[in-house]
Image 1 (tube, one colour):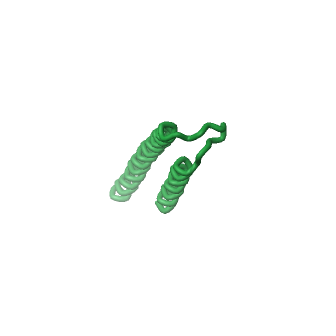
Image 2 (tube, helix red, strand yellow):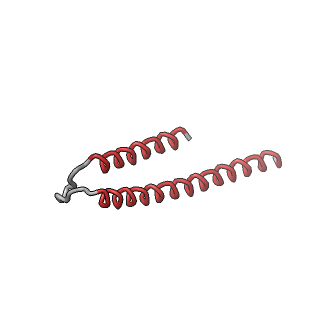
Image 3 (cartoon, helix red, strand yellow):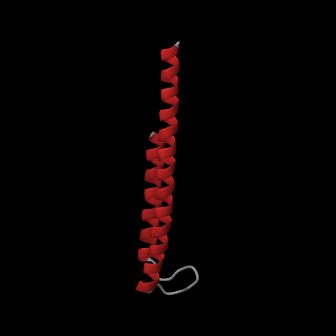
Length: 82
């Protein structure tokens, strides 16, 4: 579970760095000047990506929780029967 929290912190730093990068840049890599409207679109795209990552991690966490719970209960049941 420590790996899980470490990966969450890494994701948080990646998204924070992306948000800071979008907020402070004056011109993007294509040479387009960043107006408030273009920055807002960039933030919305970053937010949608963030939501996808959060939903995937929640589904993975629920899956891991049920797999651990299922293996623990199976082991406990076989121990009682023996």
